[in-house]
Length: 79
Image 1: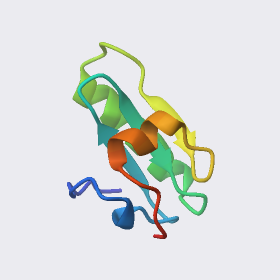
Image 2: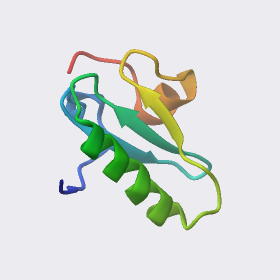
Image 3: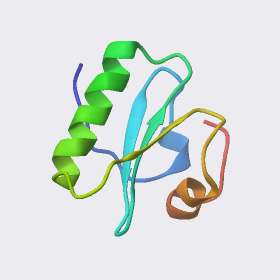
Image 4: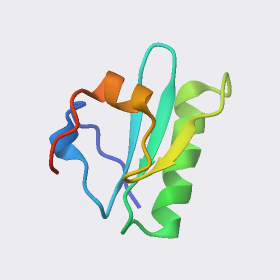
């Protein structure tokens, strides 16, 4: 498992991956429905490291996103 930083655009979401979205007030972990358990675990651990334990990340699965996720990322588009 490896992490790559990309710009925060909906087009970068991919069903086989997990993504961490950082906003000034929240941290989201998005799990694609084809992502592996090891990838999901690694994304949550990395999110915890990035936020330094100040809050728990908001973990969500593909197609079950909170509105706040799309508010930060932008309009939901095909990916």
